[in-house]
Length: 143
Image 1: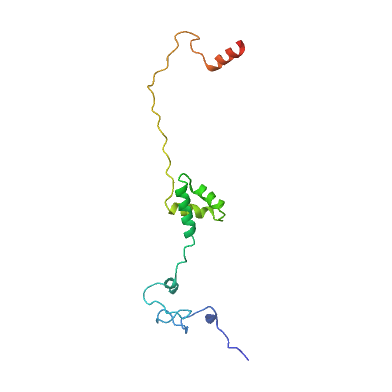
Image 2: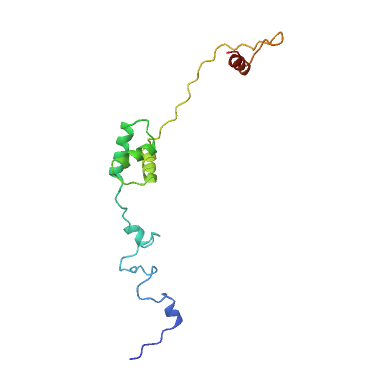
């Protein structure tokens, strides 16, 4: 049995005269789903359902550890999670840690009050000011 000859325009997918029904006529999509008319969205966008959150238990663990160990950052929390036997990527822990707004605030340095400053005294004669090295050599050679 001979097959009918196929032209180049039919091979390349020229669907202007296709029987599926294009968007112009309000027909159905490739899988028989009705196309949204006039919305400007694809059918797959309308059918999209977000995946369930896989990080609920891990997020609760991170928050619990952060409240238990207040001075631990994301790296130490990650190590504590690994000690519990959970295999988790450190980047996921850092992302969930920052999403939960658990970042530690850097402590400011404590300013020590400075005592009254006095100018250095200038020596009035030779050999009045000795350095520590000369003191040490004098002690080591004499003693």
